[in-house]
Image (tube, rainbow, N blue to C red; front, top):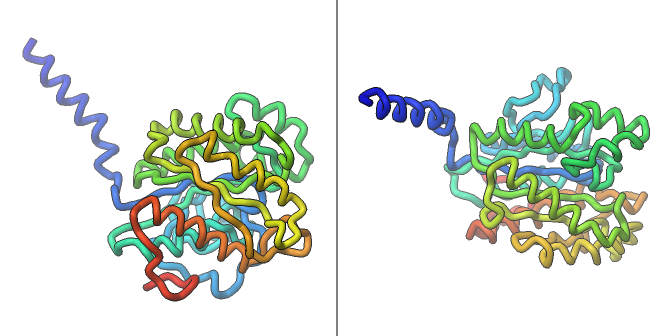
Length: 288
């Protein structure tokens, strides 16, 4: 009988140990979607200097960038895989760092697949969709171990050892244009993320960006009408507007400037949720 209390204490200490390394002031954000969340625009010189409080968890091995999967690095783009471009997550993170107290760090975990339907992130049914993917997409899927959703969860769990997940950023829909069930599919993925990462939906909002807007001639702009319905399906979700965000000639992807504006809008919404406002007078550059 004397050993039982000691055993209980030992078990408590054992399971509490990983949490001791967790920094409550390290705010983490999960990012997923298709090519616009991957980052499609060319990275420009102004994008290559970041505040050390803005970090990215590398989700694949990138020898040329001297990055190894599962480790943190300064969030110099690319923030998805080794050869992707500028993403809304870039200026989302920069804006948060510039606007939040100096003791708060920002971390990004980005697992995105160009051209994919939302079905690829369906925990239970991804395999049937992945089996039909063209070879170029299959190559990306294979970089994520053949299962992007499981890979995202694996990376997020590594990140949780160091910080606290504060939100989920989504940019997807071009490949699901006119899919009236899209909101329900997103709800399923979001719900699975909450369960698998032991998160509370009321504390972890979902921010979903609009596709290239009609005011820019967006080829999939009609999908924004469906994206607009997301807050009615997921209570703690918010739609990030894309009006005025410049796009590439293909009318599907944003330009670097478009990503900067959109990323800042994601950040503005997240800051509002956290109870802050944008501080910097400069539209993009963080306060060092």
